[in-house]
Image 1 (cartoon, rainbow, N blue to C red):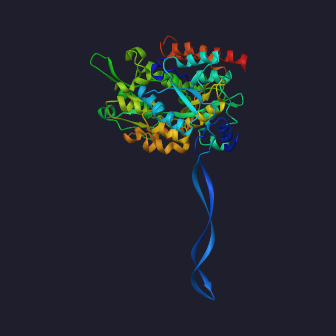
Image 2: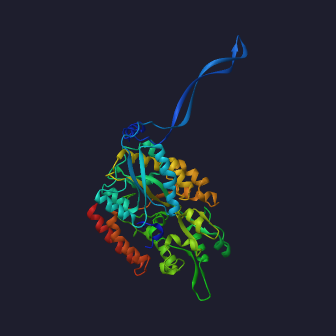
Image 3: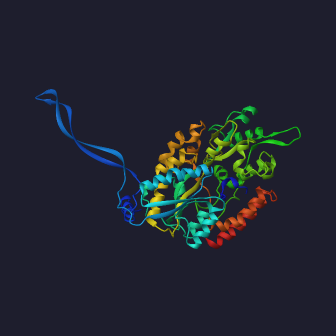
Length: 479
C-alpha cells in the first residue's frame, strides 16, 4: 500500500463548454480561454489550369475553401455585480520560491481573465491536510485546494468535495491519464481533476558508476543487471563501515516490483477489497527487495543515514541508484553536487511503473461554486500546466498534450538530464494501490509494514502473513 506523507521529504515510514461559459457569465466571471478547432469557410479567387476549347489555359475562377484552424476562444461576461473572493490552497515542494509561481504568475493571470474574482492564496505547509479536514468539519475550508493521498481519499469518500462530472466533458478529460481519473472517481462521482502526474524512474550517480567501472543503465536492464550494479556500488571502508550504498529500498512505493514480476497488490485497479501481496509472484518481488536491505545490506536503514529522509538520500551522494519521482527533478538540480541522470526502471516479466493521483478539488461548501469552477478549470488548463512544468516547481504535466513541454522545455530538460524517462514510464504505469476505506486499512497495515522494513523486528514472511490476514479480515466486513 502506498502512502504519501503530508510533506514528502519528511517521509520516514458531461456538461458542454458553452453551458459552463453561461454559468460563469451568470456569476460575472470571464471564463478561462479554451482552445478549440473551428472550420473557417472563405471565398477566394485563384488561378487554375483548365481545358478551353481543347487547349490547356490558365484562368481565374472563384472557389469556396474550407480550412480547420485552432483558435483560443474567450467567452465574454457581464461585469460582476458582487465581487467574489476565493481561498486557494496549494503546496510547493521547492519551498517559498515555488509559492511565487502561484502568487506572482498564475493567480494574477487568472484574476486578469476573471476581473470579478479575487483569489487569496494559502500556502500548504506543516500538517496542512489535517488543518483542511478540520476546516471542512467546521464548514469553512478553502474553496479550491490541492488534494492527494489518503487525506484526499477521505475527503472524496466522505463527500466533502464537489462532484465535477457535470462540469468537465469527456472531450476535455481525454487529455488526462486514465489512471488518475480512475483514482478521482469515487461512488460514481468525479471529485478531482489532475494537477500534475508523478511517475517513478531510476536515478543513477554517474560519478559512482564511473568509479566502479560500470556501464550506465539502459533500456535493456533487467533485475539481474540492477542487482549486480547495486552490489558493486556498495562501498565499505577499511573498518567495514558502509560509506556508499548501492540503493535505498522504498518500501512505501514498492507496488511496481510485484507488478513487474507478474504479481498483484490487490484485487481491483482501485478501491481494493482484498490484499494479495502474499501470493507467490508478489512475495518473490518483495523478497528481492528485502534481501537487498537485510540479507546483502546494500540498502541503508533509516538510522544509517542519520535520519535523512528517504526522498533526500540520493542528494547526499551516498547512493549509487535510487528510484526518483518526477516532482524531485528541480530539487536534484538545486542540490546534487555530482553527475547523475535518469533511466527507465529495470524489468522482469514486463516493465511497469507507478503513477500517482495529485489533483485539485473544490470544497462542497464553497462560497461561490461557479467562481471556484472557473479557478479549477484555469489551474488544470494547458497554460497553467505549462507554467508549473517549466518553472521551478518542475511538475510533470498530467495533460498528455503538454508532455512534450516536459521533455524539451522543463528545467530538467534544459539541464541536460533524461527527463523523457518519466514520460516513457507514464505510458506503462499503473495507479498506486489504495483500498476501500483506505484510512482504516492504513491503521492496520502501517505498523506491521514498518516492523518488517523500518525496524526489522519481524521477518518478511511472518509479517506479510499477519498483515494480509488482518487487512483481509477487516475488508471482508466492509466489502
